Length: 120
Image (tube, rainbow, N blue to C red):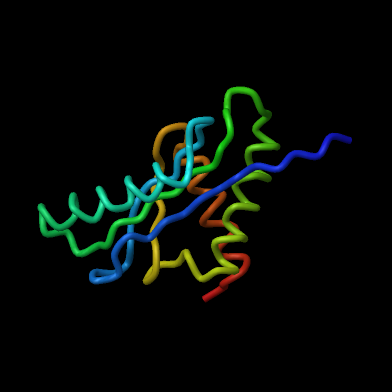
């Protein structure tokens, strides 16, 4: 059995308008600085068009083309659990969206994981 450490990030740039919103990308080039910068950019994008959201962004350092769907699901659900533990995700807190390397499939796994931890 091979053990891997996969890094994941989530940044919330501004809480002046809530919830935060922003995509989650799966890409080998994801890093902390990029996620912070893109979260700040999302704040400005929302403010310019007067959308009532703060900026957020997330990323996982992984090449989705090199892994099975089962493995990607486990990574996505694990990432979601870590966001839940830190109160970094939820309808009034931070709403993720698909971005580079993710799609409606990953968003469905996120919603399902969230609902299992926070049935309301």
